[in-house]
Image (tube, rainbow over all chains, first blue to last red):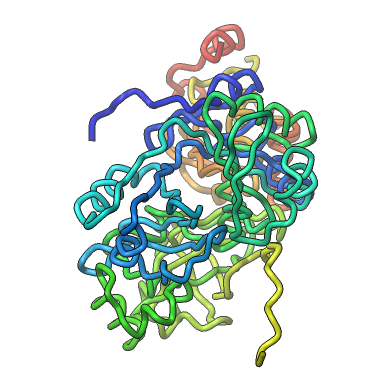
Length: 373
Length: 122
């Protein structure tokens, strides 16, 4: 990796105008905070916040063999992904390690993918290497991505694109706002209801300014990290990497039943073996005694058993008003209620294994159809 | 002696007890740290070296080391911070003080006055 100048998003100038404290993140210059991390977090939990997530990599798979290509790359049933539907999934290497986690959607004539900024080059190279048949990869570098999150997000999006209010969680549509084409997906990374809006870069500043004028609080990476830890959501590089099996990281739920039976995706042998055998270690939540937050890398002991795990992400929960963490622990110590001790500097901090999320999700889930007809 | 500052964003001034010095972080430092959620203060009686790690301030952003500006012994810590770490945000250069050290002010290196400190953070 070279120490290249961080890239600006289409919104960087707007952030600086709004008084953001900027940081370099995954090769991009992004806002860490505007009014303050806790204040922004509270806005998202109680009203609406607006994040610039344009650093994330957006790309499309097109051509008549796009579904077959997705089936090879991902453990979802891409053939069953209807237009307007999206799935959270992950991409594995041959050994079953996670190359990246991502969201893929069916836009009708194309599959639309959003993956992590820090993994963009690796993902694009991996997809390109495995492309087959009539399928092309198109990176959508001219597009911005805004995440409007919080209980008031639906009311705000309805002012600009009324049809988006009808979407359910993980549904998407293509529409126009102020004469510019947008793609809106009801999803996010905070545990709250919300929308990710992919817009042409030239229209992004006006769109962000409109949403802020309507009441969305600009929010930065600091708040985003607290929100996703509370929501128990994985961050690539913390909970996921190419040495981590997705089953251990608690992502088995995202593997489609058909792909569990049939395999056929890159890394399937290792992933299906771990599904059958169970994982030696598991990702869990930790509820922490006292006020000292646990940070990434803190070692965990269980009774007189040393080093049964390690904290992967930790921080302060403004909702629970105490520290919370996510950790990998050996399966024997992964049961909710297990008492652990974390070593922070020279102190032993008591904590208890809890199920994730720390703070309940607030998604607008599509009602299930009645069974049996 | 009036209040002095370090380039690591601490302030130090004589405490009520003779030979004791009270230490805190500057208002500029707290504004950079953001919301403080916990403070890991040293144990009373601990020997510290000038420039040595002495406490840790945990903000929502990160853990930040606090250094002892002078060599000596920790005599008192600010007990109010255990339940109200936000005092550091609200009044860093007053009620949000951290600890007091008994020791030799001469052991400090590079103490600067307010004007010089303000220039340092400008």
